[in-house]
Image 1 (spheres, rainbow, N blue to C red):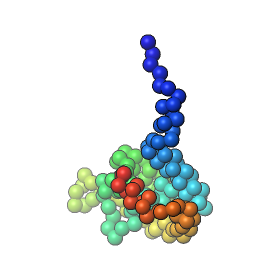
Image 2: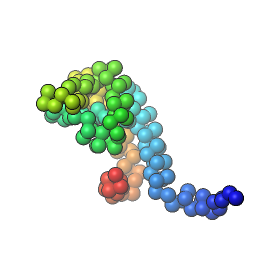
Image 3: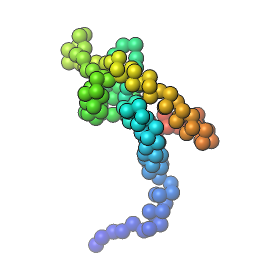
Amino acid sequence: MSKSVPFETTIEVRDTCLCLHAQRAARALARRFDAALKPAGLTNGQFSLLMSLNRPVPPPMAPVAQLLAMDRTTLTAAMKPLERRGLVEVHVDKADRRSRLLVLTNAGREALASALPIWRATHREIEANLHDPDTLRRELIALA
């Protein structure tokens, strides 16, 4: 005996599911930023990763992974193309040889600097179409 879910439930989930709507919005935003950042040679994920490394002192992997809501394996995979391009380097932490520090290279800083005006312009366009971007931002932070 198989159980089935009524079509009305499908409509209910389609219309009310926060996860579905957050995923759809995230994908749409990602596509928009990917297209905008393409001339700078970066994806939105690479831009976010480079920006997360833009600190006075190179961070270890764990806080970067936490900020980006990634596990360490996913972060390591995301770092590989940026390492190949010379935008980031991974160094052994001299204070704890088991730990790795993520270093934004000069080329990485230049890539970030060239992408920043594009990000700002795209961000302004998106926020201009939102009713209350500050509330949305606070709610998204609370969900994360």
